[in-house]
Length: 92
Image 1 (cartoon, helix red, strand yellow):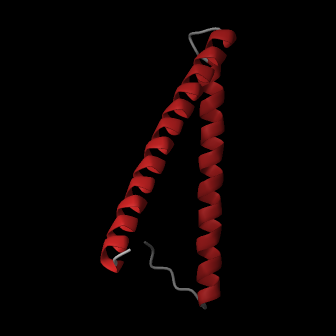
Image 2 (spheres, one colour):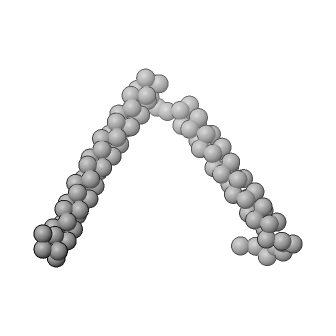
Image 3 (cartoon, helix red, strand yellow):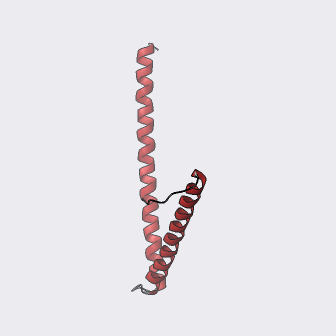
């Protein structure tokens, strides 16, 4: 990444931490500016934009619930298969 020479591992760690914090701050600032600009130049009224955002969030939540339910079903099926295999091998 760079050819800097550090006097200790602590100094190198501190410099890397500072760079990471700066990068995160720049990212958050950019996201904030982008959000404000998007809302300022949105082609819809505020009420319509809020409804659109709420509908999108509800859609994401529904998809997350559906995916979560599928994961739980798959895990329970897997546990049942493992249990049957163990019972068969043990002879219960």
